[in-house]
Image (cartoon, rainbow, N blue to C red; front, side, top):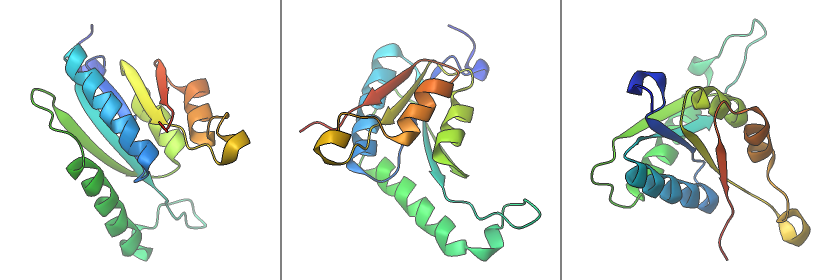
Length: 146
């Protein structure tokens, strides 16, 4: 195992406020506890881009406020985690791309699968697929338990 600064001492998990995200977070938290790793909880929220390509935070303070609330709620609903260091990361942008960036040097990336309908539940969601294909570490996709 590498040094913590290399990312090898952490599990990254994506949350989005859904039941799928909560299940992924619970699984990742337990895995971090079992492996003795820290946990980085990532929530990526929509970013507006101006015509010159810069993120325009000043135009949507409510979006950023709502994003903080989603992440705060996810962390508040998380089971007790004695001995697990939890890092919160709130970042604007495409969730799939931000999770892939966060996976750089990590031990494991954990995401939930948000299939819709009977047929679509057999499939992975677009974020899950992107992460499985592009992540810089192994990826665990947590399917919603029925």
